[in-house]
Length: 356
Image (cartoon, rainbow, N blue to C red; front, top):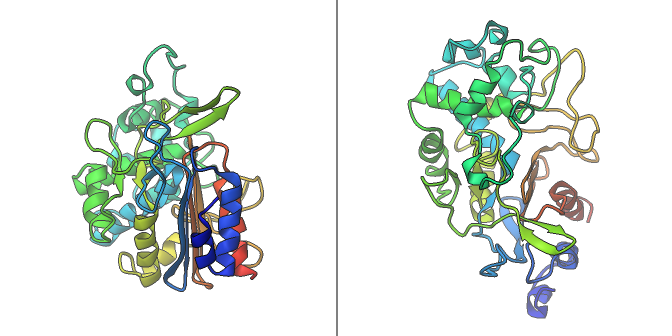
C-alpha cells in the first residue's frame, strides 16, 4: 500500500486511482508507472513496485520502460517531419527507397505502411525457429534482416490498400525509410528531431552495445515458481515497430507537445488522425472490437469520448497511452510485468476522471 501520508494528500479521484494500482502491485515485485495529465497539469504520477528484482529499485517517474508498440507514434512523427522537410511524400513507393524490393511491393506506399494497409506479412511469421540454447541477444533479428525476409517473392497477404491488418513489419520498414530519407541512423534522427527539442532527455531507441537506458526497468513474467526476468526476446532488437524506451516524465513532455502543437502543426497532426478507410476487414482493436487507425494511433472513441491511443505488448512489458483531446485528459500506464493489461487499467483510470 501507499504510505498513509501520501494517500491523505491525494484528491478523491487520485485516491481511487491509487487504490486500483495498490491492490494489484506489492512493493517488492515488478510493477507499473502511472501518469494522469488533466488540463495541461500532471494530477497523478506514481510508481508501484520495482524496476528489477536484483536491485529492488523502486519505480518512479524517471524509470524508463520499453514502450513496445507505443513507439509507433514516434516512428510516424519522424516520417511526418521528413514530409514537412520535403524529403519524401506519403505517396512515395517503398520501391523508391528499396529498388530491389520485389515488384509485388510496388503498390506499397508510405501512407499504407503508416496505416497498416500495406499487405506485408508480420516478420515474426517469417523467422526461422529460434535456437533455444543460444543467448537471446545472439539470435535477435535486426531491422535490415526484417527487410530481407520481406523481400521474398509473393510475400504480400493482400493487395495494398484493400484491407487492414496490423503490421509490425510496416513500422520496421518505416524506420529504415527514415534512415534512407534523412541520411541519419533512426535512433539519432529521433533524438535530434523529436526527443532533444522536447527535452525528452531520457528517451531513446535502444540498441544494445550502442547506448544505455537510464533508470531502466526490466521486463518480468510470473510463473508457477514465482517471478522471473523476461526482458528480451528474438524480436526485441528491432527499432521502428517498438524499440523506444521512455519514462512518465518524458511522456508528459511528449503529451504537452501534442497539446500545444510545438513539434507538428495542427494541420500536420490532422493527417495522422484521419481514420483509414478500406473496403474490407476494417481495423479491430486488441479486444477484437471495431476500431479506427491513423498514423501510429488508434482513433476509436471510448464511451462517447473521442480518443487517440495505442498499446504495447512485448516480452515482459505492457504499456498504454490514451489521450482524450476534448477533455484534455491523458492517461499513461507503463508496466514491467506481463500479467497486467495496461489498456484496461488506463481506461479504468480514465473513467475516474471522465465520470467523477
